[in-house]
Length: 192
Image (cartoon, rainbow, N blue to C red; front, side, top):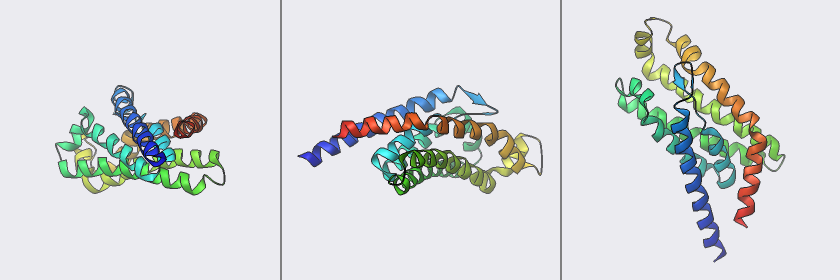
């Protein structure tokens, strides 16, 4: 019975974090740095990955990717290459959550603070890094045409599409690391 209670609590916790990811991504779509909206969802992804493991982090990242696919900003990419857009959006979210969970687990026994800060850094780095690589692989011609700047797609992606957004997301996660630790403590307390 104890295992069932844990699974029920884990599912309930994941369901709650899933709802938070959806709501925060929808709210984040109204906050802009540069041409694209920011992602506020990386904090609950890190919390879920730390509490429930890398697979839970990947799940929350996939949910994040699905919500991104449904947002107006994504139409820019979707109209050009729908398959690549779906692939990049789902991969970047899943990988960010999964790797944040792995990093947290690897470092947790040494220092929870270090584990949380490292996971909080890994999440936006992987998310933005995969977006950058996906842009290089699939979208540079579209980006150069849209910005009327042939030959400068990499610069446009780095400075215009990622730049301020990435820095905000990274700093947001790092600053909220003590809050993340508190949320993990509360989540673990409720599991017992």
